[in-house]
Length: 464
Ligand code: NAP
Image (cartoon, rainbow, N blue to C red; front, side):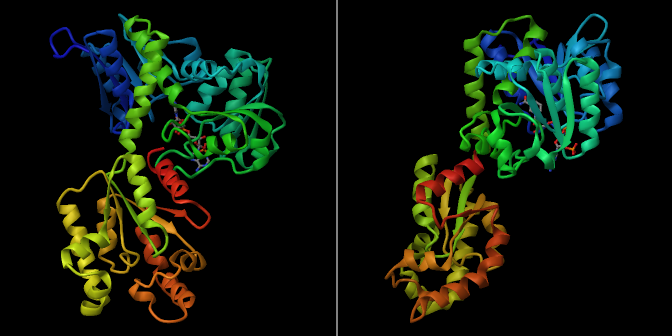
C-alpha cells in the first residue's frame, strides 16, 4: 500500500449495514500493501435501505474501482448492476461488484472462498454427501458450491423449514441430477447420510455468543465425517468443538473469509495472489481477530475458594496480562490485613473500600489486566456496573462442598469464623447467587476442573 494517498490512489470499499465489525478493510488494505498497489479499501455504512441504488450509482460516479456487499444488501443491489455473473445469478446473491465500462458486474465469491477453504484442508468435496445447516445467504452459496462441485446428495436443515424447502427447490432446478431435500433443524440427528460433509451456515455460535451450538444431537456428530463452520469469530465455534471432540475433522470459517476476499481482490485488480501470500494473510488475520477480541481486562468474581487468585495467575501468564488482586490493593491502601479491616470497620467498611478501589482502577484507565476480586464484591450493588465497566466479568462457579474442601483449615476468612462452616458457606452462596449472576458476562463451572483448564476455557470464550 502506497504510504500516501494521492491523485492515483484507487478506491475500493464495502457497503452494508452495520459495517463497524468488518475485517475486510484489514484484508484488502494488507493485500494492497503486499502487492505494492496504490489503493485503499474503506467500509461504507448505508443506513437507509432505500438508498442502496443511489449508493451503487454514487460509487460508480466517484470512480470506485470495486465493492464488496454485505448484509443486508447482497440481493438488494442486484437490480442496480450492469450484469450478473451466472453462478451469482443462480445463487441469487452477490458479494462483489467488479467495475466495467457500463456499471458494476455482480459476482459471488463466498462460494469460491468456501470451495478453496475445503480443498486446502484436503476435503474431496464431490466424494461426500453434504448437509447444510441454515438457509440464508451463506447457505445459498454453500448449496450452489455443492452443486457446481458435483455433490450428489444434499440435505438442508433450517429452523424455518419453509426457507430450507425453497432453497432445496432452487438447487434442484439448477442441478436436476442432485438428490436434494429439506428438514427441520430439530431433526438434525435423523439426516439420512453416513460420513457426510456438514457445512454450518447459521449465525448460532457467533461471538459473543460463543457457547451456542445449532445442533445438540450427538447422533449428528457421530455420523458426520467433516465439519465446516462459516463463522470465523470465534475461530473454534462450539459446533466445531463438538465435532472435534467426537474425533471428526473440524474446519473454521477464517479460510473462507480469506479466500473469498482474495477472489474479490483478484477480480478487481487482475493480480494473482500466491499461496504463500494467502497463507500469510490468513495467519495475520487470525492474529488480528484475536487481538480485536482481547478484552480490556478480565475480571474474575466468585465465592471464596472458587480459584480467583490461582486462575488469575494462570490467565495473566497465558495472556501476557498483568495480574491485579483487589484484596491485596485494599490491604496495601489500608495498611492492615483484611481480618483487621473487618474487625475495625465491619463488612460495610470493607465494601466501601472495594468500591473506592474499583473507581480508581476505572479512573486510571486500567487495561490489559486480569483482576481477581474478593468473594463478596458483588454484594454492594453499586459495584456491579463498576465491574462491567472494567472489562469482561467471569464468574467462577463453585459448590459449597468444593469450597470447604479447597479452603481446608484456612482460618483467615472473616465471614466463615466459628463452627459449622458448610452451613455458613451454603447460606452465603445462596444469598449471593443472584448478585453473581447479574454481574457476570459468563460463568465457568470450576468444580471438577484444574486452574489451567478454567483459564483455557476463559480464553476460548473471550478471545476464541
Ligand atoms: P443470514 O442470511 O441472515 O442467515 C442466517 C441463518 O441463520 C438462517 O438460516 C437463520 O435461520 C439461521 N439462524 C439465525 N439465528 C438462529 C437461531 N437462533 N437458531 C437457529 N438458526 C438460526 O446470514 P448469512 O449471510 O447466511 O450468514 C450466516 C453466517 O455465516 C454468519 O455468521 C456470517 O458471519 C457467516 N459468513 C461467513 C463467511 C465467511 O467468509 N467465512 C461468508 C458469509 C457468511 P432462519 O431462516 O430460521 O431465520
